[in-house]
Amino acid sequence: MLRILRILAAAMPIALAAQGSMQQGLAQQGAPPIVSSQPGSDYPHRAVKIIVSAPAGGGLDIAARVIAERLAALWGQPFVVENRPGAGGNLGAEAVAQAEPDGYTLLAAQPAPLTTNVRLYKKLNFDPAAFEPLAIMTSIPNTLVVRSDFPAGSVAELIAYAKANPGKVNFGSQGVGTTPHLTGELFARITGTQLVHVPYRGTAQAVNDLVAGHLDMLFFQLDSVREQYQAKKAKMLAVTTAERVPAVPEVPTMGEAGVGDFRSDTWNALAAPPKTPAPIVAKLNQGINEVLKNRETAEQLRSMNMTPVGGTPDEIRRFIKEETERWGEVIRSANIELQ
Image 1 (cartoon, rainbow, N blue to C red):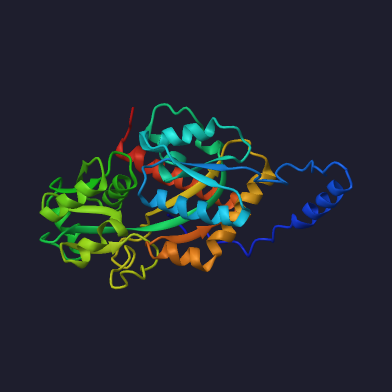
Image 2 (tube, rainbow, N blue to C red; image 1 turned 90 degrees about the horizontal axis):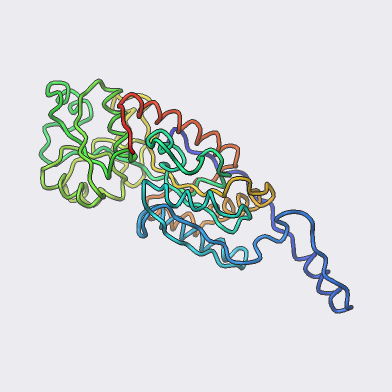
């Protein structure tokens, strides 16, 4: 992503205990309980569903389950994760967009349904800009890897080889319009090279073909290719983040490799349905940031090469708008479209 959103200062403590004690005392006297007229004051008072717009087992799913477990512990109510993948994340996003805006159905999404799909698909049954952003849960670094016998050992050598062999160097992705696909198109545009896109149906097959020598390069998440890199079955030429990644400190950034202003992270966000009341949005944002600041949570996420992020709703809304515009230009210039 263009920049890592900074987590806000420590969230204010949740102070509902006093009201609960007062209600208990009045109940003992036979008086009716006090019910606050402020929306979200007693939120959550029942189970919350988080719809994940991707299959189980991936980075988005893992991050959502970690956050769900911590929120349940924080507020004493179940946070239930339900996977609803399909159509580049659109199926899950559509379900949440049509849900009651009461804070009891949330969306956990990768970038696509919130940013690029509006530029890729001719028609969506929801407005990505209408969601109420809650937080960026995590950011995951992407990398540029090539097959082990590729005739280039650096980004500069790769660019020179691609320019000398236009249309002969290919790169893979998990499908048309995915972050690795758009990252490859961005690389080609910035470097003035002609690359051939090879879409796959998932990560494993693309990585296997790279290792087998059937594919030249990938722009994949670090956790997808780190094992192959460490086993010298692939060469990692760069990370696509602004700074070097602690897990692979020897690998330069794209900027250090000579490709300026080239950044592409995979991030995972939480959002609420359109028109969710502001007090509920604020309480969720506060709770998620509190969870992300927890040392155990942060260590758990970092152990899986995920960086906890956070942010305010306004920051995230601006960030998503910037990402939509940036990748929208890549989609337009590469003439990418899905039905």
